[in-house]
Structures are given as structure tokens and as C-alpha cells.
Length: 140
Image 1 (tube, rainbow, N blue to C red):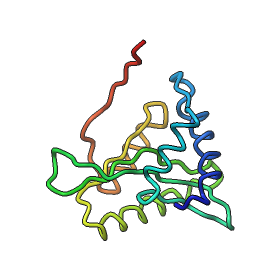
Image 2 (image 1 turned 180 degrees about the vertical axis):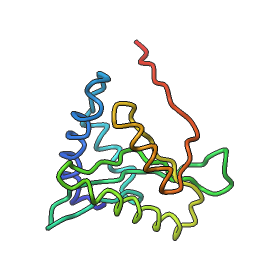
Image 3 (image 1 turned 120 degrees about the vertical axis):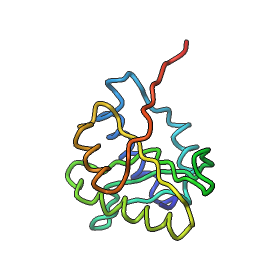
């Protein structure tokens, strides 16, 4: 991902928010979105088809108490509906990059409103295993 990809990534993020976040009452803040893009620029990837950004996998490298090596933590993995078949290529590219960087683990998240069983099955087929479920509480 490059800074030139930011406008397209913003559009994809808006589509992701509408498809996956809106029912939770979660809305993206443009200022925070720009800060996130800036922070993950070197560790995020886009899928480009015919010169158009159609997907993205935003992630960051973290220290995980379960591994002595760094962990790649996905923040958003989203491909627009028409191009979903490119999502696996995006994940495979990210995994290869992680191996080259000596990153020991990849942590992916699943929204509970997004065909959860299908995604669990896909992740398991790709060699992932379920480790934890996150619960979120908004504080006033």
C-alpha cells in the first residue's frame, strides 16, 4: 500500500463500514482513519485489478505474549463484492511477506455478522485455528 492508494482505501473502508460495522452502531472517524493508514503504511497491502484498488489488508506488527517472534495483526481485510476472489491472493501475499520479515504469527479477525461459519471454515482450511473471541463494550 502506498499513499497514492489512500483515496481508494478510504472508499473501500466506507464500503466495509456499511457492510460490516453499521449494524453495530460503529462509525469511522475520518481523522482516525487517516492516522491508521499512516501508521500501517509499510505493513498493509492492496489488491489492484485493471489499475483499480479493489481490496486491502491492513495490518500491524505487534508483540504477542504467545510468541517470541513478532505477530502480524490484521485490522481490516476487505475486498469489494465484485472482486472477492482476489481476497485469498491478498492474504497469501501478506503471509509470504510476513515469512520474509520473520514474523511468527498472523492473527485475523472475523466480524460476527459476516458469514462466520463460512469464514471459520476457510481460515481452518488455510491452516489457521481459532484462539479467542473478542467482546466490545462502548463506554459512555
